[in-house]
Image 1 (tube, one colour):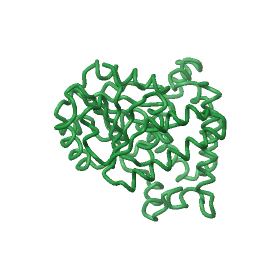
Image 2 (cartoon, helix red, strand yellow):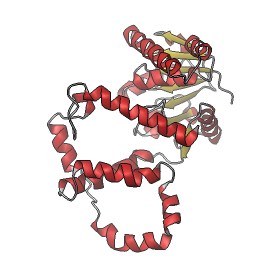
Image 3 (tube, rainbow, N blue to C red):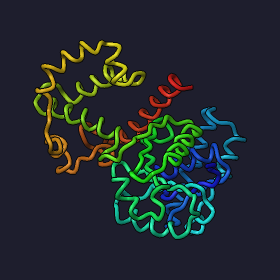
Image 4 (spheres, helix red, strand yellow):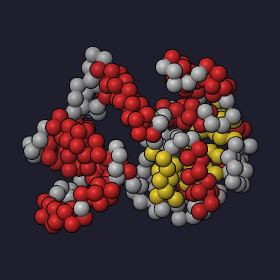
Length: 310
């Protein structure tokens, strides 16, 4: 199936970033939101991002103008009538997504594909509100979406192979690195791996084995350095399956296997210390450190992306 007309539902940070990305490769991209104010903020955000790309010589003026002219902003659901592809990015609440799916299912073409950018809600559960669940699939992006290459493509029980392959090829077309997740499991693949690492990291910090700064350095300068180029199974092959097997014989039984949210994470949560968004978490982000930290992160991500994939 060929995709030409794209509608992105939800004009938050993820939705506006997606509109910017798709508009680089497609001429007909529509950003939908039920609030005009959200659309205006999204349009301003996209223009600012594109201006930055031009100033940094990442994009020329002609390409920038074409990108901006390819995006239409609307509060009308009429935009779904002629689209081939819907990228849903609404709030992570089942009832909100359910209502949206039921509404557009009555409008869109029978052969249109609907994707959801949920971080972990069940694809099978969400598909219950779609008229054609065989054309519904998860398409999980990672923040910041314009810099992180990975997209998880999560099949529901009814998703056809044709739809999965169409979305896989779409991800390749927009210069992403897609991975098909064949079963709808909680957290999919990436978040399960991330939380497994986080659980052990927080347990080590909570027990005083290593400091917060130390655990971050272990990842940045050791494991993370390798994982930027190699997957965990590639690391095992290069290090020796026999070596990793013998380590697992004595280490697995000593690892944290708690079934509850990490104790240290709960302490910060209960204190209202949410990280950058509250200007305090494991580190302090007051006095402008929040925006500086994000800018430094994005700069490093961009350098890493160019080093590995350009």
